[in-house]
Image (cartoon, rainbow, N blue to C red; front, side, top):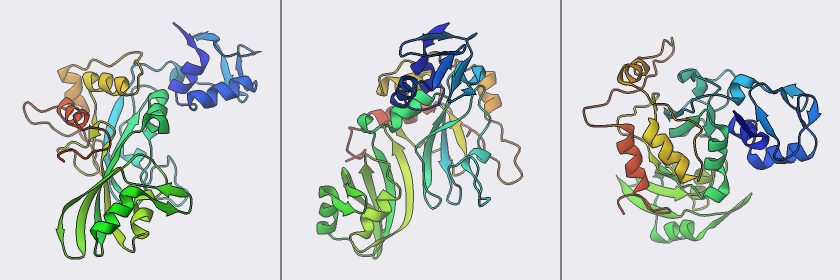
Amino acid sequence: MAERIQKALARAGYGSRRGIEAAIKEGKVTVNGAVAELGDQIGVDDLVKLDGRAVSPKRLWQQPQQVLLYNKPVGEVCTRKDPEGRRTIFQSLPSPEEGRWVSVGRLDINTSGLIILTTDGELANKLMHPSAEMDREYAVRVLGDVTGDMMQNLRDGVELEDGKAKFNDIQPAGGEGANRWFHVVIQEGRNRAVRRMWETQGVQVSRLMRVRYGPIIIPKQLKMGRWMMLESDDIQALYEEVDLVPKEVEKTGRAQREKKMRPLKDTDRKSARPQRSKGSSSKESFSKGTSSSRGRIRGH
């Protein structure tokens, strides 16, 4: 097995492809003691170092790739270790078969909803990169009166302290009086962007949930604080969405899938892959997402 060094390091989550290429050009990557060059091929027996530290062969050649969906509750943070001792999303997740989970973007502590995690760092970087133009769809409860002019302002774009931002789409989604729900689509991941955009119109977000990331809509059966694995067909489709080819996609049998559906042993919360009703699958949830045209909310 041999692979170009920049591709292998990016896939293992050591940085974006561009960032790894820059590190190689700066002489920060070595293979068996020699400074690496772009395009060098490496194999499982090679000793690779990045910034003087040995790269884990297990992480570098992890097989197979896995993708997990998690419904994050309010109160959890997306860092691996929190200096304030708050609960992290990784405490609610199962251990991957190989490597480690890489989060596709983050949600702040007060935002709930869909987070995609994968053991493939290159896939994660592709899904997060601005060039992918991935929709992030949110259900938003707004405290205050919202007019048609305010909604148009948010579609046209508003100025934030870190630059202009806009919703690619915004649609009313029910509610009455001062507490109304909206679905919004944005194609960037700036910190608290959705909340800050609404604040420019003089209203406050009282609840925020991410319900879709790119082609993946959060499955209805995925309850708050629980996770589920994507199966091989859905993983393949996700790779195709960003023009990647998975090295190997796990083919899970029934017994193995049922084993993954058991609750985790956790004193604070039991997180489990949800039981599916007959005829339902993660593929059904994924295909609903792919049918949505980019920049539009499903059903409109």
